[in-house]
Image (cartoon, rainbow, N blue to C red; front, side, top):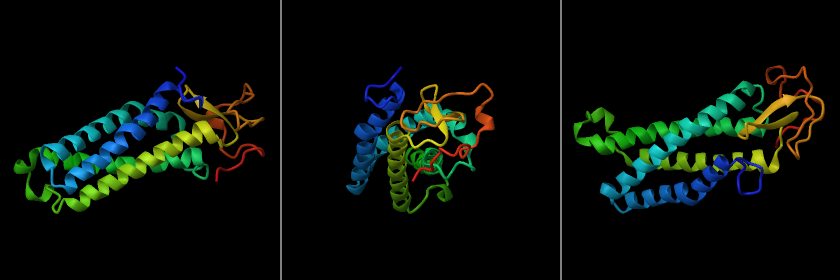
Length: 204
C-alpha cells in the first residue's frame, strides 16, 4: 500500500519514519531525562525496555529483510552512493546501539542476580553512549527515507523493490528524478554494478 506523505514511499515506511519522529526520539529523550533525575525505577527502566523491544521488532520485521534484499548485494562496491552507504551506516550504529541497550535492559531487570562483571559499572557512560547511538541511528533512518523517496539520487536506473528500497533493475536509461526505468530483458540485478552507465551520477 502506498503511503500518505506524498513521496511515493509505501505505507509502512511512512508510518515508521513518523513513528520515530513523533514517538521514538521523544521517548529516548524522556528516558534520558528520567535517568538525569535519578528516576530509574520504574520510569527509566520501563521507557528504555519499551524502546529496546520496539526497536528489535522493527529491525527484525523490516530493516534486516530490506537491507538483505535491496542493499547488501551492492556492498562494498556501491558504498560511494548514498542509497547504499546510509543504510550500511544505519545497520552498524543501530546494531551496536541495540546490543548495548539489550545488555543494559537485562541489567536493569536482573541486577541483583548478575555477576559483577556483567553489570557494566559505572553504567552512566554506557547509557549515554546508547542514547547517542540511538539518536544517530534515528537521524540516519530519516536521512535514508529522504534519500530514497525525496531526493532519489539512485545509481544507474533504480526502482523501489516491492515498494521498499531502491534496487538496480536495468541499464540503458537512468531517470533518478522519477525512479522509473526502461528495462532490458537481459538485465538482472546481479549483473549490474552501481556504475553501470554513463548517465549514473554518484550521490553527494
